[in-house]
Image 1 (cartoon, rainbow, N blue to C red):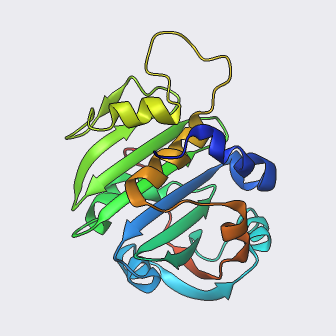
Image 2 (cartoon, rainbow, N blue to C red):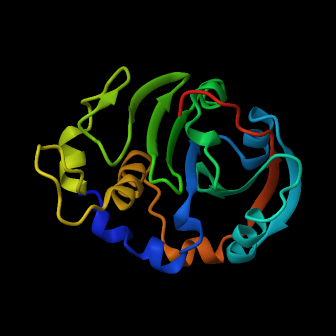
Length: 202
């Protein structure tokens, strides 16, 4: 069975600054350098200190948005502090050509988005806080999994909203990549400056 929202409560505790606003994206069979090229970015070295990376990202950036990428088996993870390029369909759809693209985003105003795309086709999109409102080519393909993970698909409002954590669990279900605090802290990342996300469908 897939992990649930409760398995990701560590994120806001271990990474409080990053948890304020972020976009996490996983792309299958695309290397970090290839992903940088697909997004029109530029490689900017490496780091094995995610805390310093996040702190730097909230200061002056390079010449665009700032991202960190790492190969995790056949998947490449892209982390954007305070970014949303991964869920911007104008940018993500072309970059998803020939691959699977899974991304989730939250900003400081608690606006969120989840995107599952396959080869330039958006299969599922929704705001994790409002999972009853879904669209895409297969919006109901994961309903039972979403219920198990912890998304509230009924009319009752949950006492404890774990929509952010549920988005991590759903991404893990779709990709087989189970993120942990230890993995994020011990990974070496390829850094990249990325063109600013243009206004568009988020």
